[in-house]
Length: 218
Image (tube, rainbow, N blue to C red; front, top):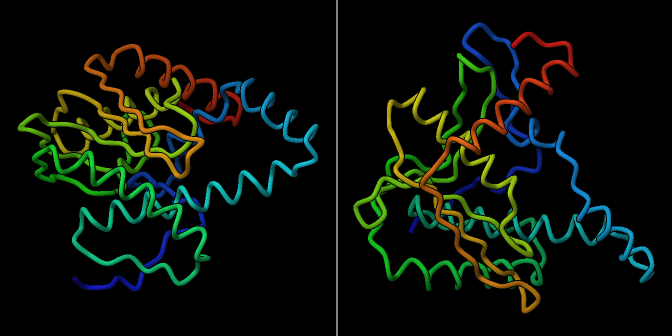
C-alpha cells in the first residue's frame, strides 16, 4: 500500500463558481443555526474547570484524523500521521476499528471519494465523503465522530445530494450517516435517510438567510 504525502488539511476548503465567485460551503451555511446544546456543554465544562476550547480542538483533531484514515482506506493508500500524537492516533484508530467492523458486512463500490463540488445554480459548495453503491444501492456516505448524529448532519448531507445531482447527474437513493466512536464515552450509531426534501428545504432557507446576512445575491 502506498503512503500518501498528504495529511488532513487544517484549513477550510474554499469553493468557487466557474466565473471565479467564491461561494460558502455547506458547513459554513449551516453555522447560522443556533446550537443550544453546544452552549450548555461549554457552560458545564467551565463549571468543571475545563477549557472547552482545548478539549473541543483536541477532539476535532482526532475526528479529522479518523475521517482521513477512513477515506485513505477507501482510496487504497496508507495515511500520513506524522503531525499527530500517539494518543490522537490511538483514538483515531478506535474509530477505524469500528468502521472496519461495519464495512466487513457490506459490499462497497465507490463512485466518488471526497471530491469537491460546487453548485452553479444555488451558489454553494461541499465535499461529500463518499458516493458509492453499498449493497447495490447508490448511497451518499458520511462519517462523523462525536456524541451522536444531529439534525444538521441530515441538512448537510441533503445539500450534498443536491450537489451530486447537479454536478454529476447521479441520483442517490439514500443517505447513510455513520457516527464512529473515538473512546468509551461515545457509541457507534447509524442513520439512514431516504427522503431528502425536508433536509434540502431547511438547508436552502439557511442559504438564503446566509446570503442576506452577507449581502450576497441568491
